[in-house]
Image 1: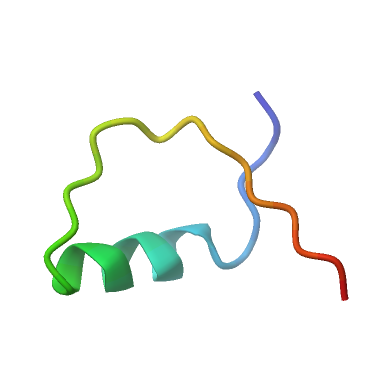
Image 2 (image 1 turned 60 degrees about the vertical axis):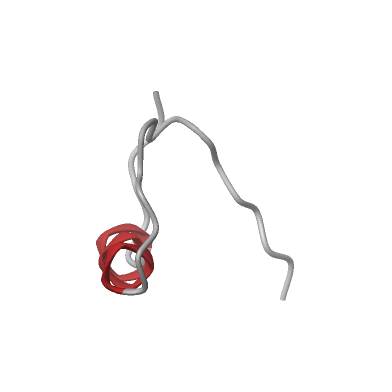
Length: 33
């Protein structure tokens, strides 16, 4: 598994705060800038 990026825990925390339930933490989102 690749190293988690800078925003991983920030985004995960925001989703949990909004009521999301994180059941699997396996997916990678790639955003082109």
